[in-house]
Length: 263
Image (tube, rainbow, N blue to C red; front, side, top):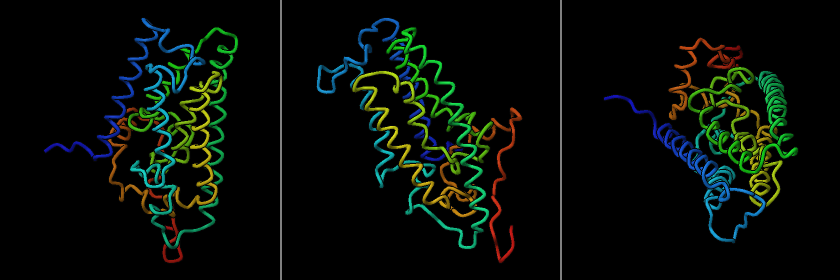
C-alpha cells in the first residue's frame, strides 16, 4: 500500500489547496468585482458581511492559533514550547552558543532581503501606483507562498538559513509577519489589526528563541531530529532538492557531546 504521508503532511496539503482556492477567489473579485474587496479602509468588523470579513477571520484565526499554548500545530512551531522539548543531556553549551550566533546572522540577512524587496510595493502604494486591492492580492500570494516554502521549496532555507528542514528552522514562525508585510502600508482596521497581530506572533517566537535557543537546535533537542520526526513535511521538498541539485543544507545531525567527546 502506498504511503500517503503523515496526518500532519496531509493536513498541510489540504491547507495549501484551500489557500490557493482563496487566492483564486480574490483574483476573481479583483478582476470582476473589485468594489467588494477595496478600499480596505472602509472595512468595518461589525458592518455588513463581505468577503473581506471571511478572509479576516481566516487570517486572524491562523495567527491566534500560534499564540495558544495547547494548539494542535506542527512541531516545527511547537518546538519553542517547554512541553515539547526533549533535551539532549550532554550537549555542548559552546556549540549551542555558536549555533545561536550563526542563526541570528542568517536571520538578519533574511530580514534585510525581505524588507528591501517589500519596500518596492510599499513605495508604489504610497505613490498611488498600487492600490488596496493589489496589496491585498500580494498578501494572499504570500499567504500561499508560506505553505509552498514548507512543503515544496523554500528559498530562505536554501540560500540563507541553510537549515536541514522546517523542524530546525530559526525563522519558521516569521511566516505571519512576512505574509502581512503589505498590510503595513495600508490604513484601516482590516490591515492594521492583521499586521499588529502578526507582530505579536513574531515577538512571541523571538522571545522564545532568545530565552531558550536549546529548543531550536538539533544538538540539544532530540524531538526535532530526523530520526524522531513523525510529520514528514519534507517528503516533497527534500527529494526535489536532490533532483534539482540545490545547495546542501547543514548536516543532518549537529555535533553534540557524547561521553565527553564530540560525536
